[in-house]
Image (tube, rainbow over all chains, first blue to last red; front, side, top):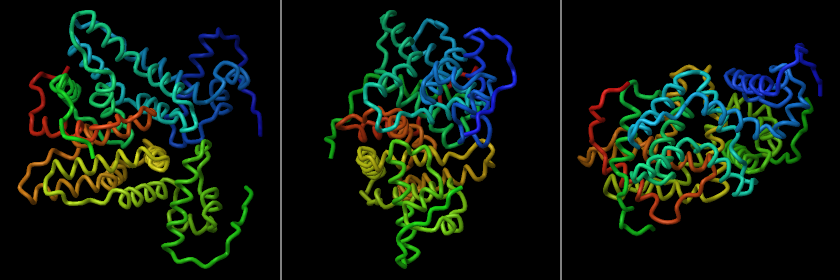
Length: 201
Length: 201
């Protein structure tokens, strides 16, 4: 293994190092050969010693998950619009706007690459999922506090989150206008409907 | 690069070689360290010279896409149930059954890993998407021939395909009973509804 040392030797705060490492992840993921993503390459790009990266994040999966969560929280501030429908639409619009950028698509790629392997314990997967769905959970809690009856988290995942991810994964364009509203209408229009009475095979 | 030659030297038909290579892809993807998937490793596992693999598939992306499409077609035969609702439910039930197996989850992983990079021309991405959606397109064509009015392909992607993929990607369990019917009900219940009249921001 060749251990290239990064050039810059400027003293940076832990937060500056963290931001530089996150930016390196996004930059490397945005490149066509992003498949070869690994901690030494990320550290080199960030101008950080790779041992610091290992010490702070431990594994590539953890670093990817941390990058994604941090960026998504930064890019999708949760304004209180006064209603569940308004909050979900605002969240969906921010997500669509993000997915129209190369960085946004890189973040989805990071999410996918940080998929826990089947060897990972279910509890750890559940924790990562909860972390990624934190914004949606906040919107749900706010709605409940208002006296609204939000759909379950998993239904929001199926009907609002999944379409964005899948279209980005397959490289299919998002419709130019009205897509966030369309998805929210589908979700809230069918909210509270009981599952089909038809028995499962 | 070390070029380990595969052990077996038995003469096999092109179809036997193809099946062995597909199986090697699925096996390697099912392993926890499936991230290091590459053509030499696949060829070695399959007992095939890697030059044959390069000659036949060209790139790892193409091989992954071919493996997925072939396996999905084998595992999800399209029986004509006599109605769009029946065909889609049967398709969804077969998909859920497949995703409950380690091999099925490995196939989703293969789909995700074969995601065209952003550098790939839109036409090539569109072609790969069409190929993956071939079963759904056949169900739609059959429905149209019956005089039914199936939802657009992209709506089926959003409401029926996306939830399966996203739950598998995030490692979230699929509900034990009624899930295929629930998704089909959501899809067909809202089929033909115009998008919301609310203007996009």
